[in-house]
Image (cartoon, rainbow, N blue to C red):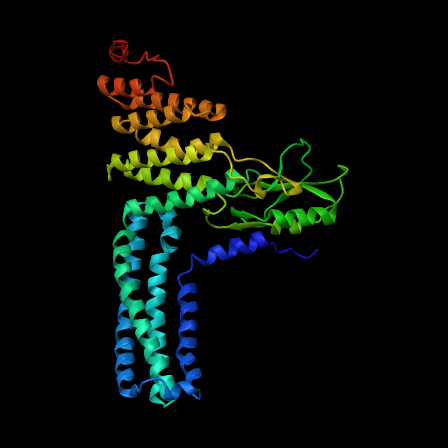
Length: 438
């Protein structure tokens, strides 16, 4: 059966192009070459008698200056970007590298500088070989001034952007933005547009042919195959799942639950598996990356509890967003009736977000207090499942703080912060319990 390419898969691959530094500069270079020859269209028209005379020497001087300077600026831009990437990877986490590389401001600036260099080289070669006439020279001069203005504006804006690109706060903001987008997509389509898992009969297991992380599931392709083969597909591995030889990607069965031989190759191809997790369809990955940043900040070598506190606030915003009603739209109702997909586990999301911070920040009173306040806020939301999970994590974090904190006053502060979520039952430190009762 031929493999079906769906719109969803095309969207996924187009998003991957943003992670490649060469794509946008290449597109701008092609446009620059085309722009250098657009001026030739003015030759042979009545514009020759209307436009002022521009000498070839003047435009050659401008193009020569641009050609000499743009290559230097482009080289400087690449060096600055590489330095910012290294800084982001060392101060935050290597898992945020793809977001830093995909920075639009840096890619646009590099594309502008390289495109201006190519434009100047092509235009200068054409002018020196008398390719343009009077009207063409004039419009080439106008294009050159426009390119100069674009380069200056882009350079000024890019200097401010590159100064912030490698900073920890900028990396955290980028991770939060990517996580927000992934959370919104999954909140609006909790089963990826498919049916929720309903049946207990699994059917024939389908395993991956390579080891790696599930990056994307083409639900449309699964639906098309299931309709043609008269099958039902139950997805077992959501995006972000590590596909091992013993980890089933999905289960397929016939409509009548008969055990027949099934060609599952199209099902396997609907699961895109790579070496790394991606942010697009994996909301939990964003939570893991933020938790890693907080864990590094709480390490003895860094000792930066303020960053961990900032990320706790970020988690609070993200889970409040997750609790909001879905955005009305067609994606809310299942479109693929032959595919069943499980919803993402709220318990797993809380584990990804708060476990590392509770463990690494157990001996830091200000982090423990802020964590208890955040979990108490989440427990107060009108969501019974989130309340139960938040209270469970609050109790676990409090137990870790009882072990990690040495001073009774520090433990009392954490207990007071958690009081609304959990009654004080500390038997480890009698002084702390008496102070809390007071």
